[in-house]
Image (cartoon, rainbow, N blue to C red; front, side, top):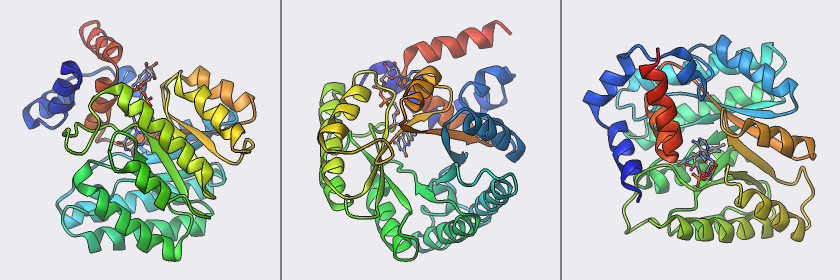
Length: 307
Ligand code: FAD
């Protein structure tokens, strides 16, 4: 792995650095490039702008790695409040929610995470929208897929995320490519060991394309999450070769990254979903985005010193 990427991902887990950066007087504009804001109102405002411009949205209430049942409950309540607001504002048709199981108790007890995720799924169904379970580091993959399988018994539309950097993922794609499934394919954002994950970006890209083909060959609804200018046209061409029309799959990108490409794809008739994070716990999310691209780190540091 690129040494700068490893360093930034290590910083994401370091409590001292976390406290220093999170309490530094970081310009709101810097964080706001990637995060909608801290409140539900901020999330709704950004969602409305995106939906009005022809995009769809998945909203993430920021937070992860909770080992406290009360905090997990607070996260569930935050999602319920968000879903109510989406419904009240008439935005539920264009916006779903993404949930990290570690934020709703997975590290404490898988059953608690299942119960909490089910509360969110039930509320999403009532509001007329869906839920996708984000995928976190590889130690949680089996547990997340077990919880997914349980949730899908009641809510078949609950979406999964698979990470192309893991050796196992092409097999997981084949297992999850059945009718009714929704699978988001991404490269993967965590620092993973060579025993479980490809370390070379070229290998990750090859794995991504194998997974694209596997998902497109199935009967599910694939959601291709990438900003990679080489992969987007490959996905498009492979989808056409598999007879998928726009609407039979979707592109997904992160809020603040390649917005002009998001609009270009939407203008071609593709469904494009923007992943919009919001909330006070933006630190871990921001560090992963910085790790993906050194230019972002330079942008962040420049903004800090030029305040
Ligand atoms: P990269 O090889 O990282 O980037 C290719 C090119 O894309 C870059 O050269 C640049 O032009 C552009 N680009 C990429 N990232 C940035 C950036 N940060 N800023 C500016 N330009 C950039 N990961 C998980 O592990 N679990 C998840 O649940 C998860 N959910 C995701 C949901 C969505 C909708 C998206 C888009 C990503 C998600 N990710 C998730 C993150 C993903 O795994 C990658 O870390 C991230 O998308 C970067 O990979 P990439 O495919 O864009 O390619």
